[in-house]
Length: 363
Ligand code: SF4
Image (tube, rainbow, N blue to C red; front, side):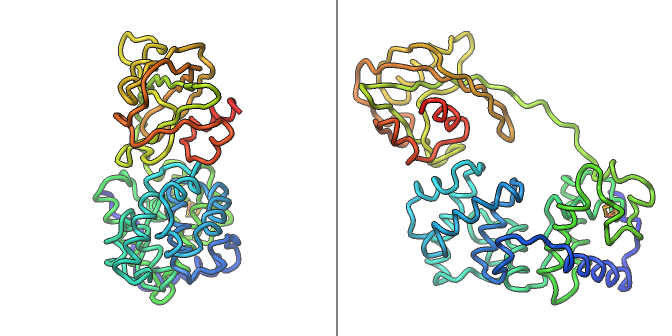
C-alpha cells in the first residue's frame, strides 16, 4: 500500500487534534445521543443504528427505540417481536436481533452494566471493533480509536492514501493512523470530531475544503485529488430476483408467516411466497411456495402489486397476488410460525420494507 505522504511527528499530531477539536467545539451538530453522551446504552444504540444509516433517518428511530426500551434491562426483558417492531423500517435487522441478544448477555454476564473496555465489548453479539471503540471512547473516555466510512474518507484524503480502503492491509494502516493521531484523554471528542468532519465537510462528493480545519496540510487538497480519494472499487452489478407472494384470504382474514431467526430478515413476518424458479410463472411460484412453506392449497388470483426493492447484495421485484385459501391447515414447514389475522392487525407485526409497501397499498 502507499505510505501516507505526511510524516507524523508529535507536532503534526498535536496540530491535527487541536484544529479538529476546536472546529468540533464550534460546529458539532446537536444530536439526541449527544445530550447524554456518557450513557453507554445511548451511545451503543445510536452507534448501532448509525452503521449503514444516515443521521436524519436514525433520529426518529433512536428516539422511538429509547422511549420503548430506555435501558439495558428493559431491552433484555423485551420480546424479540417487540424489538423487531421498534426497528421496523430501519433495515439490517441482524442489528436489532444482536442488540437484543447482547442486552441479555450484559444482564447475565455483567450484572446489567455495559462493559467499558474494547476487549469485553467485543465479546458481545453484534459489537465489532468500530462499535466497541465508539462506546469505550465516547461513554468511558478510553483512549481507543474508531474507523468508519467517514474517518476512512478523511484519513485517505488527508494522508493521500491511494490503496483500496476495503483492503485488509489498508484497514490495518487506517486503524494505526487513527490511534497515532488520538490525543490522550480526549478520545471521545476526537473520534466524534473526525466522524463529524467526514459527515458534514469532507463529504464523498464535493468536499467543502474551504471550511475544513485541516485544509492547510491536507495532501489531497494540495494535489487537487479530493474527488479521486478514497479509491473506489468497481461496483458489481447486483443480481435481480423475481419473488412472488400471496395475500391469502380465508374469509376476512389474511395468512402471514414468520421467517426463521437464522435467515436474512429473520424473525420478521411476511406474506408467504418465495423466489420464482426457472421457467415457472409467478402464479405457479406462489402456489408452490405456499404448499412447501405451509402445506396448504390456494387458488391464485390477480396480481395486485409489483414492488422493486434493493438490498445490499441483490435487488428484487416483489409480485403480490390476491389468493384464496382452498384446503389444508397451515403447518410451519418452511417458516417459524404462521397466523390468520385481520388486515387492520397487520400494523402490529414487524414486516420487511418491501412487504410494508404492499401493506400500504392493501389497507
Ligand atoms: S481539506 Fe478537503 S479533502 Fe482535505 S480533509 Fe479537509 S475537506 Fe477533506
